[in-house]
Amino acid sequence: MKLKINCLLLFCFVFAFQAKAQEKNNKYTTEVTKVLRKQILAEANWALTQAPITVTAQTSPRSAGTKHDFFSEGDYWWPDPSNPKGPYIQKDGLTNPDNFVAHRLAMIRFSKIIGALASAYKITGDEKYVKHAFVHLKAWFVNSETLMNPNLLFAQAIQGRFTGRGIGIIDTIQLMEVAQGVFVMQHSKAANKAALAEIKKWFASYLTWLTTHQYGKDEMNAENNHGTCWAMQVASFAKLTENKDLLNFCRERFKTVFLPNQMAADGSFPRELKRTKPYGYSLFNLDAITTLCQILSDKENDLWTFKLPDGRTIKKGIEYMYPFVADKSTWPFPKDVMYWDNWPVAQPFLLFGAKQFQNQTWLNTWKKLDHQPKVEEVIRNLPIRNPLIWL
Image (cartoon, rainbow, N blue to C red):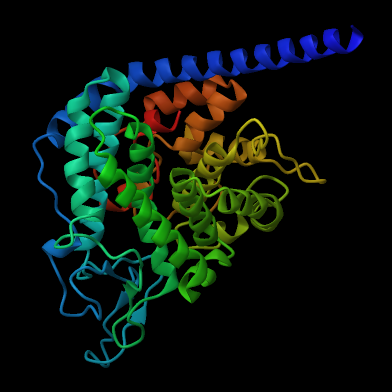
């Protein structure tokens, strides 16, 4: 009898805990919907009029790959004035405007389309958004004439030096909202089941490449935001493909690598502060690491409350950066050499942190910031632009 009572009490406790968590989730979903509904539906209506544009639409003579291979060039690399036809030279923080960016822009557009359609579907339940999303998804991942190969062998190339680099893997953070959009829409009646299987197969193949190719291994071991973004992508794609081993691997990276090796005692990220754009990179890395917590935390694994022996937590990182978002004039470090005036925007760490820690101040600040940035550099470094599909 005593055992039965204890089991009943345990069941009631678990049920109450889950009910409270669901109530908290519903509250923030409602809040976000209220703020973004008009924007989401407008963007989704635009998306319904768009035809697919994949990497095969434009190519560069400087690419060593095929028309199906994603190609981009190192942002901060320029022709050498003393040797114009020789290897490019680096100017850290200064973007070369003559770089080939067509594939990057196509992927950002793809992310915007799927994110908007999935968000609108989540709000309305209208299957038309799912049906059109699969037109774009099939073009990128299924149709043999237009698909992108599941690797990044030719990303962030440097003329005269490298045909591609592991550092280029950061370019596919744009596919995270594509994967999450698929995750949200996959049980819709309008979801093409055959195409869905092929899409998941593509992401599984890309995960294999990310975790076995030397470029992927190099990026995994990067000590700054690149390492964070590798894990953020792997976690996102592993969630869609139900790869539990990789999800657990990313959880361990968070606990044993990112938090202990990247965050200082005060919650800052010293490696990002050393860059020529310390403010933008600090925002970016905090967005990435909180998104990692959002993806990987569940009933058995709560990264939000994980604490190192010296007290460092993800919350400490948000608490450190928040005052400089609320009032950027208090930033105690040098201004970014480019795009200083374009940050902050509606940073996802504010929303995810507000939801997790029930912080209305952070949520109110998120509400007031720009939810539709237009500057390409900002869009490229804002991994979550459709937060509703992540809640």
